[in-house]
Image (cartoon, rainbow, N blue to C red):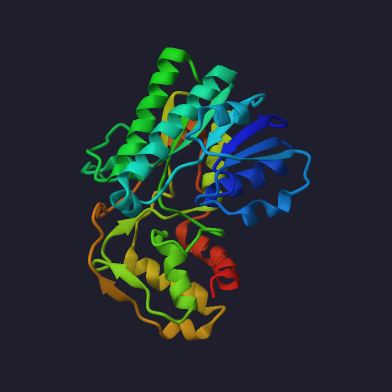
Length: 321
């Protein structure tokens, strides 16, 4: 699928803007729908004036806006959501409104428009209290947060729309994505940009818990690749883990990130972490099995966590000091 018209919801966000870059680079027309609640205009500034790029400022909670955005599109990459487990614990209603009702609006608009492919962002949070390690797509547990519940709901909705209405859906369960443009400023920022900002501002990063919790950190380029594959895979009505298949503890992450940033600012090397209380709703360990994605999607991580941190360090140094 190339040279087609694709709607990217949440296209001004961290992941969405990287998808916009990749789609325009390969010759597609791109429509972005974003309300800029968490997305940033500067993430799309490079495409201003590009005749292949259209920006619609609007909210996925408004169905008419969703219909207008998807009109004439061949496919949808649905990235719009209110992320963060802690934010969903603080304001569950807003998270559920955006992530569930907004999702229903977008997929229903896509159904009415007859799109050829509907790819959506799910999350490793759907595994909840599942005890299997590594996480396999067929096993999910009870949700441990409103955010996790919202993503479980989206997956169920996509299954219904695929089975009953024939919408060709592909769900991608992202595992702790990181890279350039990830905002460290929010109270609910992801751990890597938050650590990076603290280090580059010569503050001690705070690790929640004792640092033994682990995650399958996934560099942004892997996620972009997975979305492009999902646009053309014959394996529709499926859910895939998108990760690297390797586990990194928070302590290991801190040391690797500190070393990468010290290459740009040597004083960072002397900064030690602080330790705080565990966050409510956090799962202790998250590690993906990516065998299904390898077999059916043709996915292979091109950049593991350590190399991803080295690649991202330059952007962090230039933007987070």
